[in-house]
Image 1: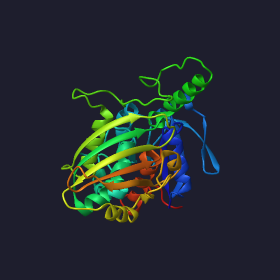
Image 2: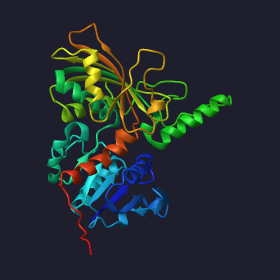
Image 3: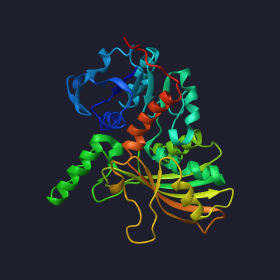
Image 4: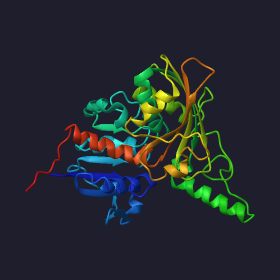
Length: 344
């Protein structure tokens, strides 16, 4: 018997991608429903070769839903995830609302699959921040081999990380500049077209931004609380795909060749690392792909047991929608849930 899956926030970038991926991966669902805000009532959304009509969140009964993929923002998740979970659906939430809750597992299936067993405390599972997700996929196999002690990461994050409004602003500003018109700034604190902005999310008292803080605390929760990490998060004028320059210090020796071989065999990773023009992956190539791509692996001569690498992934897929669907697949594979409705 197949499962019933609800996608909440189905009209957003991530919600639409969740529906695409459910169809692509032939998720074992007998029924998939699209849920959004009241203003989206009746909006039609593609799901494979079918079309779904959106239902309003406030009027949706989740009592026969098995898995709810939630991508409707932090405020909505904070209010509705516990309500939906109380009706018996396992909520897989893409917002930051539940990530650091000690009773909610924060899961990247390639990295800490066993931690999913703790979901029953609140019936909620958290998806990590998009920039964290690809980072820990790359770090996990290296940590297992040589034990990471410290990471310094600089991100190059696409505007899709800020949703539709971010993508629209880059498009609008670019067209305005080519037309010699004034480029209006709304979504971002400064012009994003032909620019980079070293500021994502709000500033905290210590001078770091919340996006940078998320990378620190989420990496510790998912991978190892002993790892020291410092992040600088930068928004760049790219539509899809986050990139990261990562400096890693290890407790034990590890060569660049060893790292490449380890990563080639690691789940979710793809190594493209030729020492020639174009022998690396950029966010343009990563768009629409599931893998976390690793390039530019080399020794860091400034520290003992140090490596540097370049890490790229589609933030809307692996950083959000794909990871959520993989968590659902993990629940089923580990037989942690059963379909509520029985075959007739």
